[in-house]
Length: 199
Image: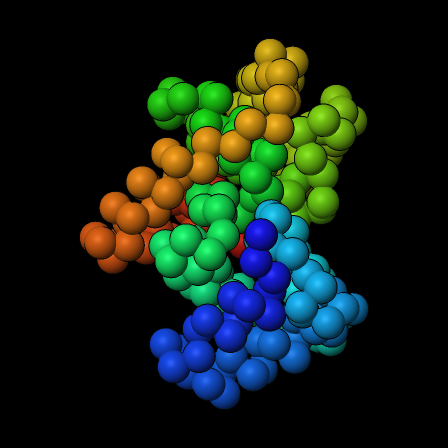
């Protein structure tokens, strides 16, 4: 498993050096560690640390999004180069990605679970910790369409999950390669599944 330092070093000459230096500084502050010691097991957890740091510094939403996009761009490049496992396909942890993969292609179910997975990941909540209280809190915060149905759906999907820690990295890598070759970028509504209320 490559360290965050190794990933950033591998990007030298491929991206703007000044942005790379700035990101390195923020990541060191966010993780509180020498980046040589930070193993990239789940890039989304590091992303969450980065966002929390920027929020604590009073950064605007635009600045935070810029750092997030730059960081995730580097992570996807690193995955395409074979330096790390492919990351989750949205703003959620690998554990949530496995839940989404298990849901399959049912549009309504996947849409609701994407919304919940993104919200839960931003709070550091993993599938095993998603209690009924947390599911109800999510429904109230995001104003899910058909709240009762959404709560029941999330509960039933999580109840049927057996988290084996299995990561479908081969399928994710194939999808990542296809997206990279097509140059596709999804908007936030497509990523989260449900339209979020303006803050």
